[in-house]
Amino acid sequence: MPRYLFGTLFLLLSLAAQPPAFNYDEAKVPKYTLPDPLVMADGTPVKDAAMWTKKRRPEILELFAEQVYGHTPKTRLKLRTEVLEIDKTAHGGLATRKQVRVWFGPAADAPFMDLLIYMPNGMKGKVPAFLGLNFGGNHTIQPDTEIRVTKSWVSSKANNFQASEKDRGAGSSRWPVDLVLKRGYAVVTAYYGDIDPDFDDGFKNGVQPLFYKPGQTKPEANEWGSLGAWAWGLSRAMDVLEKEKEIDSTRVVLHGHSRLGKATLWAGAQDQRFAIVISNDSGEGGAALARRKFGETTARINTSFPHWFDGNFKQYNDKEDTIPVDQHMLLALIAPRPLYVDSAVEDAWADPRGEFLGALGADPVYRLLGMPGLLVTEHPAVEKPSLDGTIGYHIRNGKHDVTDYDWTQWMNFADRHLKK
Image 1 (cartoon, rainbow, N blue to C red):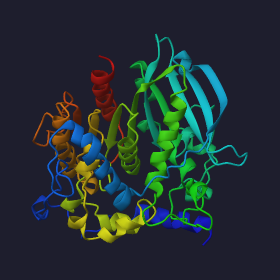
Image 2 (cartoon, rainbow, N blue to C red; image 1 turned 180 degrees about the horizontal axis):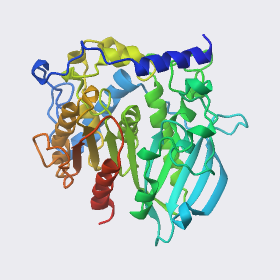
Image 3 (cartoon, rainbow, N blue to C red; image 1 turned 120 degrees about the vertical axis):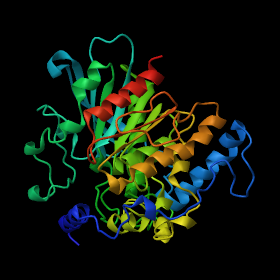
Image 4 (cartoon, rainbow, N blue to C red; image 1 turned 120 degrees about the horizontal axis):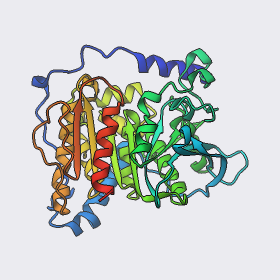
């Protein structure tokens, strides 16, 4: 099938109306029992932090890798970087803008992603940073005419799935760069399509082929899909940030919205270098409990987006109770590092209550590790954030989106943990 037809199919699936058959009634949530993150698969209770760290945490991580997201290849590629541009007068002198091309391997024709870095000027010492992938290309996060336009596939049917100048700044409402810079944080982003195009192309145009064994043409049933690849890309961005002289790589806040929130949680679970992990409206396969069957379900997500998860995950379509894990256990893998989860009132598809319950379900692990965890047990009132624990949470007015309100709470939370 031609590549543009895959893109068309992706758009149709993404824009399809949410079927009325899906449950949006709390009274119709089925009874369910969550797997206990503090009980080993053989029924042995986890008694202390050492047992969690050495036995239970690796066991849960392996279950998610095998049954949900797929195993990330252990082969380490030798990255090659090229500084494309540095401008110390960006945003009216507020920031230094740096664009870095990250080649996935030494070959001249290796695939690559472009990192866009904004660093606040006039700061003493290294600065903390917010790192996240974007949906439309780096040029869409700001109207800055110097940002390179992506050459990767984008979801714009009007432009034959190619980015254009008219997209510049189209996603700037989700990236309040000046607001973040003025709080003393760097902003780092890359386009997720540079890592793996977001349509079901049989895993031919992303990074997966770099790791195929001789004769292999697609990932095995327990190997990574697109979410796993995007998570891998975030770790490769961290590799680069560890070498940035102006950025404190021990204070990198990883954040993601929607499907990129799912990838963010999986990246944060696998890579403990990220200081804080933030999930925004990540829903099914992210922070929301699958067993609630509220809004998007496992069957729906695997049908609409068959490339996101591994092949094994499809066996749990309409059988959420049989998955050996649920999403509270993914959130628990972030412990003892700070974790922030947030939701939106009008985003029923992502199950805001299920996202909160996912965070609450991770709390016992944080407590075992000596951290305060989530300081509320009932779903907080709208725009009354819980920021004081090691797990933070808020639900705001509005729809499935990223807003200045979200960013403000993230920075307030980060200030508590990174600027003590």
